[in-house]
Image (cartoon, rainbow, N blue to C red; front, side, top):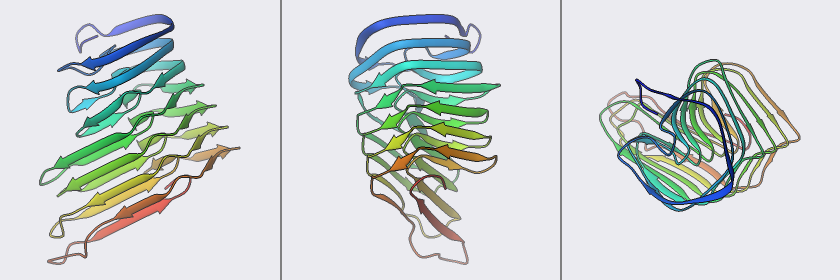
Length: 231
């Protein structure tokens, strides 16, 4: 879908494999609205736009994802994840979904925000995940950004987050190299949340989590936060 003609409706992939996606756009379904997608597996490699993911680049309205899995390695910038880059609208729910591949984000700029996650990089709507997990190693490398978020399942969230029987076992590393700038780097095993409530039930993290920034320079504030579940 595009910004003018968003993909809408129900799609059943019948457990088919999608391999080696290379696109200048947002992902297999591009931009969606009021969508239910189920039973798809991604493998090989994925290459897309600066805000992209194998399944959906931008999701609007209500979004339901069931039994979708990513094994495709990803190297991108700005916002990237194993399934969905950005979710807006009313709500998004994922059930029995997973990421198994390594994902790397690299971004150098004088300002801005970067989001990286095993499943969903950024969400402004309420997020529910049930029986979801990440096994891939996630690495976010930034220079000069205001904020950087790296979460095992969910990157930056500005609304309510609910997770049931979810886990992360991938190693998560988030770094910022510029010292003469306002920097806040956040890494978490499950979700990085700025606003809204967080509820985790029967969830856990066994991956190594680290966030680092250089010493502050010229009076700038630099902060690094790392947490096993939510940060």
